[in-house]
Amino acid sequence: MFSVKRLLVVLVCMMSFSAVAEENIAVVDVARAIFSTEIAKQRQEEMQSATAFSSLQAKYDNIGADMKALQKEVEGKAMTLSQEQAAEYKKKMEYLRADMELVSRKLQAEIKELQNRIMQELQPKALEAIKELVEEGKITLLLQREAVISATPEKDLTGKLVDRMNKKTQ
Image (cartoon, rainbow, N blue to C red; front, side, top):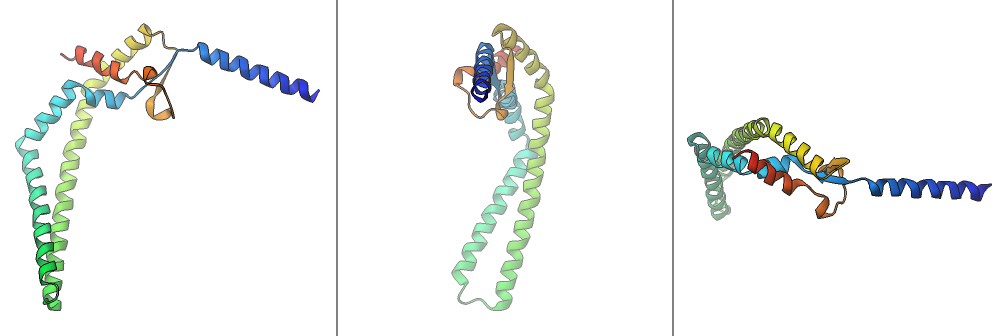
């Protein structure tokens, strides 16, 4: 009786595997596809060349340079600094660090806003293109790439999705 149960379990598993083998399964990374399109790259370039963003980026870079210069200055004078001078340098460094964090948050907010706009603009076209790819490839199961541990490159539709979206957004 015990071996019959085992045999039945093995047979059921084999039948399940053969049923899965008949399925046409694919994976896709929708977000990567959207941000890899030419229109998304164009939007990113537009943002980076905008005056507000480029001035924030320049401010961030300048603060970083000021921090490095101050650090070198402190290292050069470390042996001769009084406690008051050391405290003053530390205070300046903390102010620069706070300024850098603020500018960094502003830059991140700008980038996040751009990402949201790109997603809103391109998501409908992505869904339309996915539907077409699924129909053309007779795909019975499409999984989000992040949910899959391993997939062969031919099962990944991300590149095809990028190509299809580029054609749709020209």
